[in-house]
Length: 359
Image 1 (cartoon, rainbow, N blue to C red):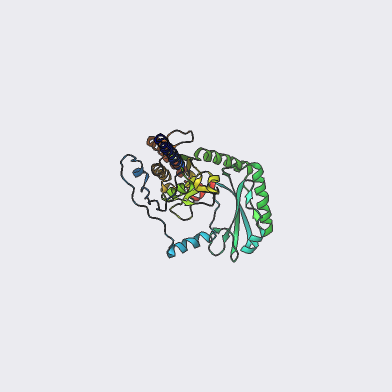
Image 2 (image 1 turned 120 degrees about the horizontal axis):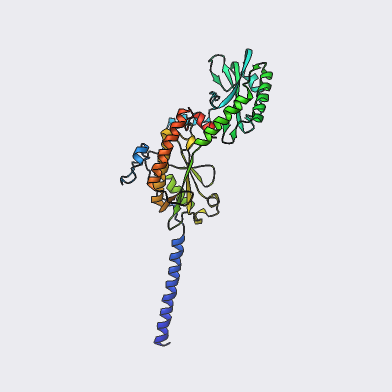
């Protein structure tokens, strides 16, 4: 073999090796980012919205304390969550209520036996409360106690709309059947007035039902589901029962999550999810369901900025427009006015009545 042939063979080999190496490098570069064994750092949420909205100060955030379940407090919290509540739920602000009088007290077992099989009237929740003879407090009837009076109620409005005449008629029939079964006398409010109240409440709810969302979009490299979950866990999110969804828990027991984070559920259930590429995840806030004291929008902005920074992404709205800090400021100002109006109506965001109305 001549020197020229050898040189050509060596040169061809080098070119081939270069092509293979470039292909491997390109394939590796295009793989979605993977979760690493190293846990994401914990980040402390800002103590209040006034501290968050100084977005350009460059300061780091304090360390966030993760909840712990290795003490008796964890067992107490679990017991509280698994013990059914019997506290009253009906309120004249959002319910049509019909009182049921009795000639003499009856046992809780008799009341339970007389209750209808469903706790709904059309699309509205229906409830029955009893006035306990010993404590003189209203509660959901329970066995082992005696009750001297009852009241039945149906919710005037929720996210399905206002209580209508057909639903009110069904409420009357269910309540009358219960009263007859326990030997009680029931008094109903006039239908037209209650339906009018329902429409007014529904109009108020429709004007204050704020549900906000941001999207995080990958700038260069896509994300794997595990990478997204690891980064979100560093901000305090926990997995939910729904594939592709994580939740940021409330700081107070008995309240729903502050924020939701979601991505493609099919990617989360893929045979090899770590090879699945995600280019967007969504952050969501259901404003009426979260206490104002949680500063949920400030937390939402904080999380979005932190995740965008750590995941090499950008924050966009539903129209794929970049969300700037000044836009966040404007939304925050509008939300404060909304909170004030809800507080004035005694239907505060995150309160029991607020959560019922906006459900």
